[in-house]
Image (cartoon, rainbow, N blue to C red; front, side, top):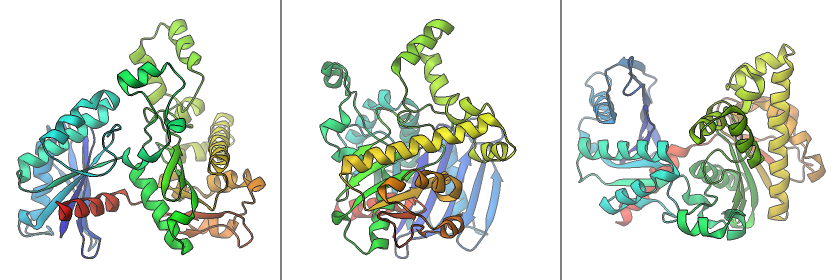
Length: 402
């Protein structure tokens, strides 16, 4: 069974074709700059082929056509007929409170994803474009499955997801904590249980997905009890360009002083804050690291804030869980920044966390394993995430059950 996994953005379309017999990635890549000048497709195969194909892609339909052509190409394609693709799995960011598990896509599901657009205007619109382009390219007979970022977090209790604003706004507009990065937290927590040789139902885990967008998740017995991202992915702690949580009055104060509209403030907090806003250098942590090593004070400050806030969330979630068996670091920064991991863990010594500095420095660039010492009261792991594999597995399960 070969499953195509799709993650459609507003101007991009990431794809992976996975052979579910072996769970190996046959081909993967990204259609970039869709609808813009200079659009192109990247294409990598299991045998090491790596191509960049320049192609005009005005919309997601044209992008899918390029993906199909690459997969079928007589020289470097990995399938002979398009009907070898048995099913398609889509990452859908916002499933609201309705979708608590991955779901076979039909007209009703599409309408519901449309209804949820106000909760994730950029993401859900792009996800729908990907779904509709797939229908046009593969036809309605090829089953498609929506795998929702929010679904894994649907087990949160009300005390964790209800905001302390007038309750009527939850009833009228479904304003609540939803959480994101669900497929990532789900994958690494399951993998962590495997490492520990235990049933996940016997574990209390804190999962740290640290990238340009970041979130931390408290998982008890395999169920989420709290997570740092909220109504939108802006909530939580400092990210590449996002502010994370702050005093709401900061928003109204700046808006009044600078005569900014709600849209202006949304842009400022989502695209001009975080590491970029504090450092004044970049949203890319590698640039901040270089500047900090040269003594740039604002770069050093940005890193100090980031590490401090991560440690605070972990400490808070250890309290929410009433204990902790394991801490996981994953995603771009979590997997590749041993300095961040060490600094965060140094702040968690009061919990009995102790890491092996040599192991910590070794586990980068896709390597996974434990970085805590045998004496550490909480085991600490670095586990590269694999959201696409979760989507493919869910897609397979849903399709086989239909």
